[in-house]
Image (tube, rainbow, N blue to C red):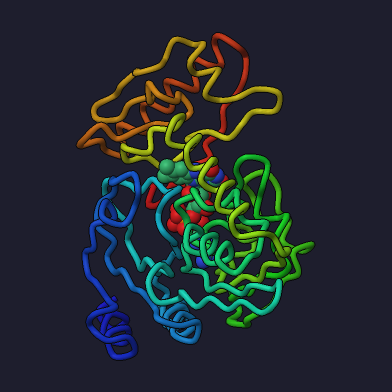
Length: 301
Ligand SMILES: Cc1cc2nc3c(=O)[nH]c(=O)nc-3n(C[C@H](O)[C@H](O)[C@H](O)COP(=O)(O)OP(=O)(O)OC[C@H]3O[C@@H](n4cnc5c(N)ncnc54)[C@H](O)[C@@H]3O)c2cc1C
């Protein structure tokens, strides 16, 4: 590990390599112990170098974006966390084609496309993730999802090759893609949008933002919807009907504003969240016979 750290420092410089970085500072849940090493490559080339060095050293690594769909263990992560969030933020608009680096925030992508008079990403403006994380999760909201606007995705494959995947090959489904199973890292994505009046785009984004603020506990740390939507139901409604609004374990609580969200009321640990989720799942299954599945990804456990 020490050799790898020295190699990473030599390639990336001290500013981009952090040791024992608290993941609570890198996730919207504000939960998570230290990552042994946290690196922020400033280009696709650097990212490839970092991954190659980790592989050579046999040290576990994982790629994260804005940490808005992540629950990290209280013990943190033994290995290297590679973050695309700062440094891989190139954005190019050519006619109705938009190419964005994995670290571009969806809020920026949506607002720049709005300014350019390109519609199609209105749904994405309020999702607090990066392009990379959104592709991996096939993020979606209010009837839109990444699948509808993506044309192709640039992926660093486990063998070190960089490959453009056409959207048809991405196996995009409800909050899933082929990326976790193929072990790839998304480095960039291309979208095809359509010409639309900027004022109309902005009005739609403002309205969706208003609905989000009204319905979701965005004022508290969370990782968004905790559970996937079970076929034929809404997770939040089932949890509410089970009488679990406000149910707490330690600092973790089922939001009273939207039962589909687990929020960090202050000092919540990953153990609190997992224990709460287990009890919520058991109670919903007991009362309604519906199995809830986690949408939030876990790291280090
Ligand atoms: C308040 C709030 C509201 C939300 N609303 C929505 C919503 O409306 N719709 C929705 O779909 N989601 C929503 N989310 C969840 C989250 O924002 C999305 O899932 C988002 O797409 C995650 O992006 P990220 O960059 O934060 O990914 P992260 O949380 O950093 O990572 C998510 C997963 O993707 C992997 N990953 C990340 N980047 C890469 C990469 N470049 N290559 C390979 N793997 C990668 C990570 O290892 C992890 O497994 C919400 C979250 C919050 C906190």
